[in-house]
Image 1: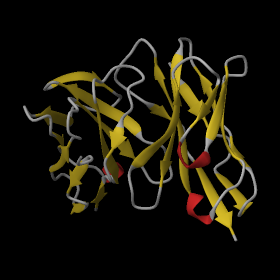
Image 2 (image 1 turned 45 degrees about the horizontal axis):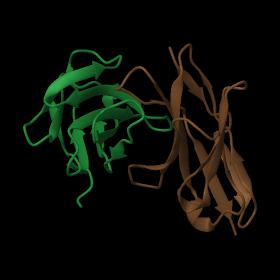
Image 3 (image 1 turned 135 degrees about the horizontal axis):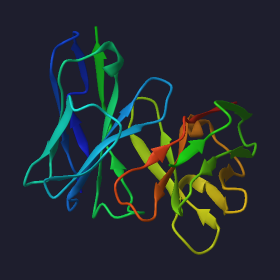
Length: 114
Length: 114
């Protein structure tokens, strides 16, 4: 059984650019959540997708957007990058998205904005 | 709103000694509780979770945690640590009536010394 995978591993961008991060969910999982983890902090929830629909959103501006595809893989898009967007971006998949359901995390994408 | 406090940013301990990592939470509604571990350059891995029932929860790698509702705490313990337990540990909660997000504490770095 393949776990959650993310690409790319590392990424360097400059302010104002746009970036797309990708996530493949674990087999049999239909829910994907995205988190931002700044250096030295805990992950912060960005949004969740359930069966291709956004199912909840954290306190992030609209320039953070996402997609979920029919195979339940997902993308996180960030427009107009700012220095503070530098962080580890984590994707997590779960079987149903229900409360208490275990979220399985990928290894993350390290984004550096210069 | 919910919040999670991990009072200790770093806990140094000698190998084979016991350890306790503290977690307190605040919430106006009932929550589920989780502990995750993050090894260097990796994503988060679930150690254990409390959904209901016995307040003492056993997890992987010899870890256990006790839910104390009156003190709103969910401390993580291990009777004898190994060098390989060196990692960042995150406590998290999710609302029982909501499916979509984990709220994390800021993490505790466990440093096991020989």
